[in-house]
Image (cartoon, rainbow, N blue to C red):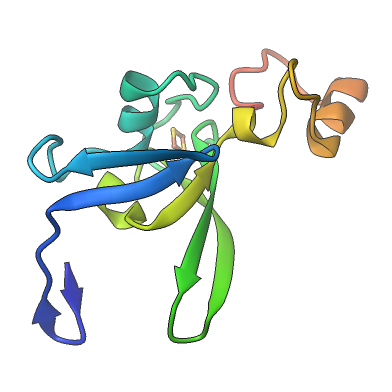
Length: 128
Ligand code: FES
C-alpha cells in the first residue's frame, strides 16, 4: 500500500462485514485473495456468488462504505468482490445481501420488490 508516495506497512486488516468486525493478520491471507473468496470461505455469508470472475455478471456485487478522514465523509459504492482485493477494504464496511435483509430481520425494500415482481430466473445472481 502506498500513501502520498510513502510505503505503508499493514500488519492487520480491520473491516466490518454485515456489521461484524473482522480482523485478519497480515500473512494470514494471500495478498492476492479476492474479497469474494474471503466472504465465501471464512464467513457464514454465502449469498455472494462467483459467476464469471471477471466483473461481468454481477453475482458477486457487494456494497462498500469507505470513510475519508480528510473530507470527513463516507462514500458508498458497489464493488465486484471477485476482483476486489481483500487488502483494499481495510477500514471499510462491506454489506452483502444478508446484511441488507434476511428472513430473521426482515427483507430490504429492494429484496421485497425483486421477490414480489419475480425479477429473477434461476436466482443465482440475484443477491448481487
Ligand atoms: S463473479 Fe461475475 S462479476 Fe464477479
